[in-house]
Image (tube, rainbow, N blue to C red):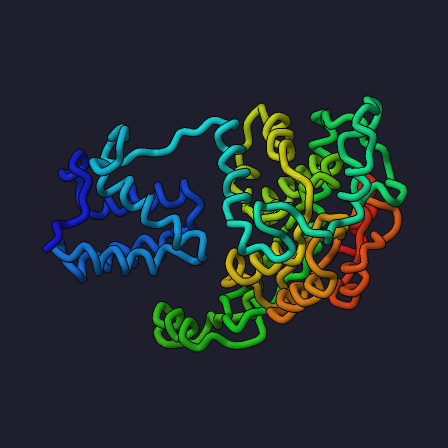
Length: 403
């Protein structure tokens, strides 16, 4: 029978402290493990006892993992904490080995994650990971570009087929611009309409009398109902998801898009994803506040290849990454020019999956007019609104329509 899961260097620590340390490591790896999950894990450890590691690990995994990505990540994190002796070259510090990657390693890991899927599972590609005849207009324009033209921009692509709202010659942002962006995000977040839930909360004045709380208050007055308690419907802010296109056709706009996404990640607790041919979540990177934010955003947007699979990325988002959180009233913001290498009808099907869960979809594009991509034109009826976004002025103008 297996021994109890316990790091050797922390064996003297009480179980509650070891579970708390393990929960902290899970949070470092992006898992949503709060107080409730931590208490449930501790109760499970008391229920199974110290000699049943396999069922205990299965129970903890069911408690802590809320997505397919987290489920796949679990074994490695579990072994790092409870069995560090099995890791080659691992350094044991208080029974766990925390990954300490620099920015270059983090970006490289992000690229590898987005390119990890085998080419056989990607419709629209042939063996050897070579694209078929189905290309975006942006990729065709880039392929026809003269390589000897030193003055041509690095990214032409689909977004450049129509006139951009504002030129973005430089990617450096001044502190006052970043402050203005954060202020706009705060104002727009305040306008997002909260939805009523089925639960109630106590309030000074409300719609319904809270009889139980009223009776409790009457004890101090000898049974007299002198302090009635009221309750109102509990409201929850809508969940916000941002999907930013970082393919080659969007390279000149990706820095702006990710800075806007970071502002809403801080103000509205939005989950942020980037995609080109694959989808990857970058929310933890958006929450880091250090003096090198400029380099971080530039590094994330650099080095991504051509091609855009918007439909496949949206399906992956709806079926795996946000399956448990997409609900009525959720907001999904897509930052893209709309040019897709997937078949034109697949984008409408992917957007329909998102809409079927009750989410509202807004499409932010970096051009003056709505992009003329065929896939996007077929799916216009599923998109609530189109919003131009190429500068802070465009985001300020969008305050009137974003709610």
